[in-house]
Image (cartoon, rainbow, N blue to C red; front, side):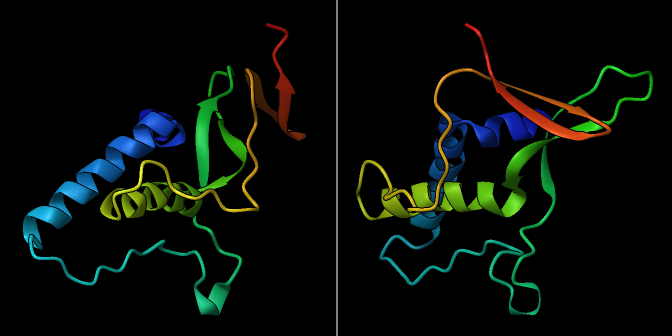
Length: 124
């Protein structure tokens, strides 16, 4: 879950992207073509497969069940990191955001149960 918390935050995504950029610049100081892979995403044989859902916590039962992010899978987080890496390699401050990206502003609470995942805005 700690890894997901890093990957879910913009700061964490930028940190991971910065590591990728440092490695690329170290090993290809004169530049080179670089291809980024999003794993499952866009795989022709299974076009809707975005990999595993992102676990954001666990319920409070004696044998805790995972609570999944309502919309994100592993390929979605990888894509965000790679957009930051691409922007950094191109010398841009921020990457262009995809048109279909859903941004939730403010504080939100996510909880899970047998009936599914619930997303609600915090009162604070």
